[in-house]
Length: 601
Image 1 (tube, helix red, strand yellow):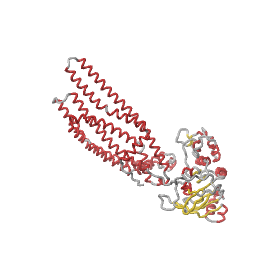
Image 2: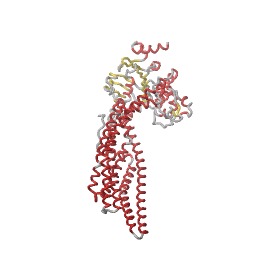
Image 3: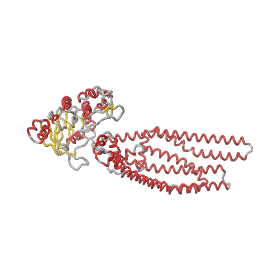
Image 4: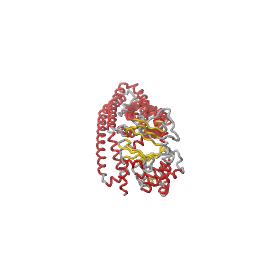
């Protein structure tokens, strides 16, 4: 897709309205009803004010002051009632608008989350995607609500303006047209600077993301130790400040240009409104109209000008909001490249032949070279297969292909002869229990941290404790202040921090909890001591019984227990066999093994 957002269109506006209606139909109906009720009140208030002024003027010449006073009091009461009704409707509309905005914001956030999860990892490796995602996250949650509010504002002002215009055109049609025309330059200025701000936002997305990143580095726990130990605080603060100053100056420059343009255009509008008021005053002095007429027309011109100004302003805001929403619609149109055929096949349960990589090659979408080259290997049910190789040899990439986070560039991966591309991704992934090197630390309770491995179980299922025992973390969690109910991490109240090794055991427990046919451990014990590692793999052998298991590790004490070992280098398999066979070959595996073993001699 093109990463440049498209210009807004009537179709975008229709989609925005459809989105608002789907998110909050009841509140949308309430908003429309209030709009209709509010639209007619201004003209009623003007007419009541005219009648009041005329009644006061007539009463001054009457002998029976009580009769005149009674009429004036009645009209004042009616005017007050109309004002109170207008206030009540405005307050109600504010509450309805707030409720509608909250619901729509949550709805849009849900759409963003769902689309983000549905997209492949390859999108997250493209900086243009991150720029688009940044704009969407910044703008989309509140823009649909602003569109609705803008439409309500435009519609309400348009209806009120039509009523006022009908009154003014009956006596001052030429002045009315001239007055309304004087407001058009201001609208053109707003449209021009809406375009300019949109372009600026698009061009500065990367810099704004960098500002957000620096802010995160300065305030996150992840970087806290190094920032203090390496005295990086002042460096990052200065970089953050420099970027913010640059962005702030550019924003202010655009805002200043818009303010200057609006000032020039507003001069004509102000001259028109006060010239009209002077003309009405002259007509009253000449006796052409009554005092009540003068007050009514005075206010009619003022309100008409205000309604038109707000309506035109609302139209430019509609354009601006729709402009920014174009990024949101482009984001929603992104499609995952990892798809499956329809109808899809069921994952074989139980597997009888296992997993086969058949001449698999792979190149990352943003990469220049093949990461995997003509990989052929087999993992049979009940077999533990290990991958060995230096960093960057392609071991973790191979695991990503097995999980269908990517599809092979060439060749195929099959489960019992079924190409993984013919399986629904979610059905495949339910059959895989995995721990990556960069496993997640969930800032949740200990129960929940393990339960995340199989959320199809009840949150308090007894298997959670069994999984914790298998990974060796049960005693640690049970000894926390609130046991398994203790929050892990320090982000929230009464949270308890674990060591790196303890966090890794929690991640392992998630794998042990999962009812999966395929177990994948990518450096599963890198943070564990020797005794803990031995206990984990003793339990792992028991867990992997009857299942397909894939193990990646730099520790040969772990690798030795595998049934078959493949050695990768430069994205190719260069050796394969059992530990004893590979040692006898005296090649790469032997060299790697002896390089590690010498530290224990």
